[in-house]
Image (cartoon, rainbow, N blue to C red):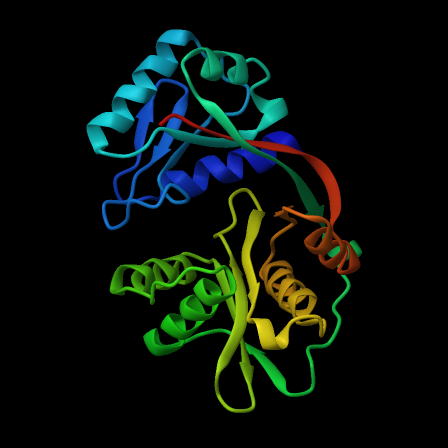
Amino acid sequence: MDARVQQCVVATLSTRPAALEVGPFVVGIDPTTASPHINYATPRPGAAVTAADVAALIGAFRAAGRKPRLEYVARCAPGLETLLTAAGFVVEARHTYLLCVPDSLRTPPAPDDVDLIEPGTDGQRAALIDAQNDAFGEPAAASAADVARLRSRQQAGGVAVMAVAGSGTCVGGGGATPPADAVSEVAGIAVREPYRRRGLAGAITAETTRRLFGAGTEVTWLEASGAESWRVYQRVGYQPAGERLYLALN
């Protein structure tokens, strides 16, 4: 399963507007944003990597005006961390990723005063992005490029879910990448502060996952960055499966 998850990341990065292939790496470059969470590289699963490949990768990032950074499933490139750290990369994080399949999904209801819907207009997409930014402590409002990126992801088969309170305010949401080989990443699960600890994060995660399975996806995966999110995801049917590494070069 590690290889399928890693190939999902490869497929996602390959759709970036200015994606590059550098030896065994795919580099996802998006000229509309300098965010390192969007502009990063990953190795093809099982590919042999050399120090020369790492040097070429650093050069490609520098030429694109982006910070060299990678995300990947650790077991799919067991020697890569050593090569990267030798080149000056620093480990940013080690996250456990969790998997869900249709038979294990549990779908708790959303709070009575919240509806879970898929954004169908650019205004709704902007409201979803604003809610996510607010929940994650990011002050920036949704840009036109952010909205276009979300719209494009939906059009390619990805999922977006927004949580709308009775007042009409978007109070949270999440989404998922277009499936690759029937595998999709669920990400961006966010709930604004006044609506937390009411089961909404779990309901958003489950609804996003349910929509993917309903469209034929076989496996969904996501990452847990802490004990609280771990509990949320396990309650709706996700189980730990492996480790992902994040490394960057300043």
